[in-house]
Image (cartoon, rainbow, N blue to C red; front, side, top):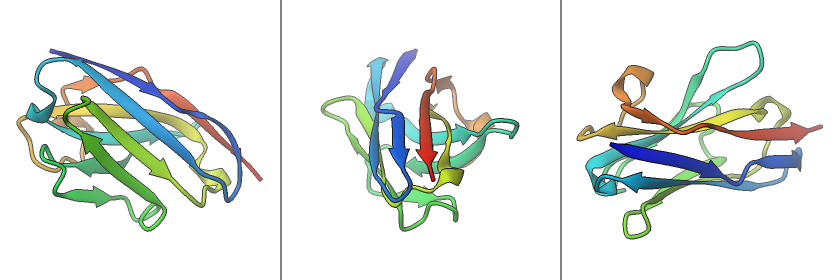
Length: 124
């Protein structure tokens, strides 16, 4: 079992940047592919990005490609989401998630554990 704790959310102006962190407590971190999802008010939760267990492979939603970067540090049991050129439509609660022994995972059902979420608000 693993516990996920996100941090780094906040309020930023359009065009600005934020870096989210997700610290994992518990089982061996490198056993998990990791992902970020987000949920905007009144909308369903959606996939943002995923990273493989080694960190060698990543995938992104089209809406964030070229602006967001996922990375991980297995020695620190942490996954990061660097968000640049933020837009008001990026406003959402961002969740990190862990998928045990999987490769790149784009769907919610593939994930075993979820963090509590961190709010990102982008003002225009």
